[in-house]
Image (cartoon, rainbow, N blue to C red; front, side, top):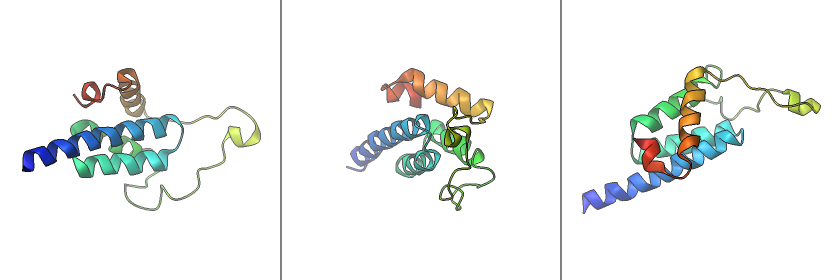
Length: 111
């Protein structure tokens, strides 16, 4: 049935959003954005949209599906042997903290 298909997409969307959060934790913003976009395409939720929006706004004006995710990241302190530093918006930090706090409980993350 159509409803069963939507539920299947919802589960896959939740899985993709979890992968996106893991990619962001690992510092791979391009992959995080890719999986967040896939999550929204499969089953759009407010959380997935906000997560994607926060990623897109943090790409330096990439405004979404442009080439910003494909360009190499700027050199950081880690490239010179120091500890990496990144600037995130307070909204991004809040959303990521919320996703990380939920760990594997995706239903809790999605609301």
